[in-house]
Length: 107
Image (cartoon, rainbow, N blue to C red):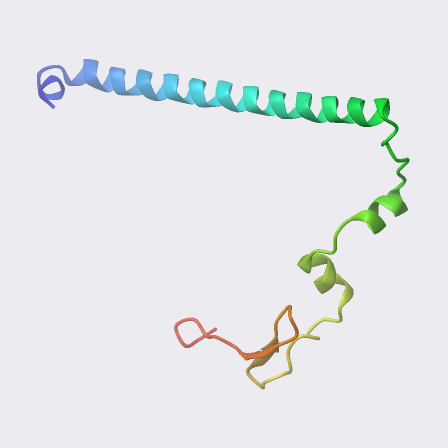
């Protein structure tokens, strides 16, 4: 605090410089983490190919092999299938019927 009062311009410049250095550090760390992830995926792919574990994939097979997510389930249902109009009750992912919770009594 003492430096700020004695040399405000120098202190403000130091704050800007520290922020700039921190941003550069975080960016470099993120780039390195992403690079390690890409190298890891490449190594896994090479291992699978070397041991005959690599499967041929096409667009249709890839979709069938994925795990069904709640968003995929919602996309296949009809709009409004999980709730009844005006009843204040909805059906959750496990099939249980629950009352609709309202935020601030409006929604």
